[in-house]
Amino acid sequence: AFFQCYSMNKALLVTGVETIGTYSFSYNNYHNLHSISVPDTITEIGSDAFCDSGLEYIFYYGEECDWSKITVEDENSDLNDAERYDIIFDSIEIEATGESIIPQITVSKDGVTLTEGTDYTVSCRDNLNAGLAWIDIIFMGDHADAGVAEIPFTITPLDASGAAIGDIPSMTYTGEPLIPDFDVTLDGIVLERGKDYVVEGSNNVNAGTATA
Image (cartoon, rainbow, N blue to C red; front, side, top):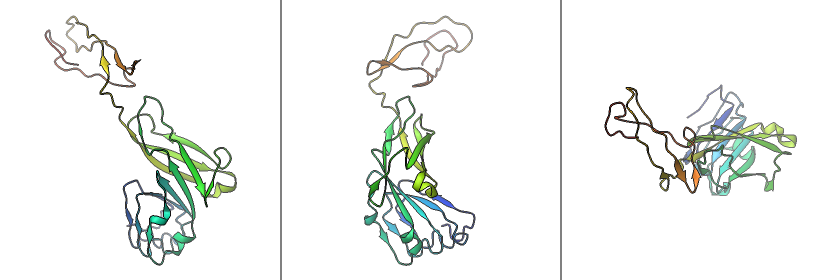
């Protein structure tokens, strides 16, 4: 897939990928592949997948990290010699809350749990709305050479099936599209329009019944 991709020094595989094929990252710029992020959905790594890649660090992430379950074919000495960090999520899919999401993680190496603030710090991006978000793990201290692990996680839409919509008032014709003001409440909390939900209208210019 990335055979002789000479400019690559970092790789990221997303959750759901199951196989790293033969020669996928081989002969990468003559030993230039610094790190790769590998999800715990990977079950097989083909022969020579990392031959002469120069791979130094593996960031293995997910909810149930178990490297021993992966079948690793022959001729993967770079992979076997690389240092591996296990990044375990309490949940890699988190429901939106209307606030920035920071997932709970545990980072370990060689079975030893690292300490946030001493061995690494974290920052997140694209972590407010539903969709793909990122947590960056910035290694420091004795682990600084590992650099930054960029790990994706998923924010799922808020379940608003139990939301209550307040009274919708009648409005006076103005010749312009009209959107009424009303409250939306979920679990006793009044949601904020524009942040927690948006309102769109149809048939909302002329006199009659409109829809919001």
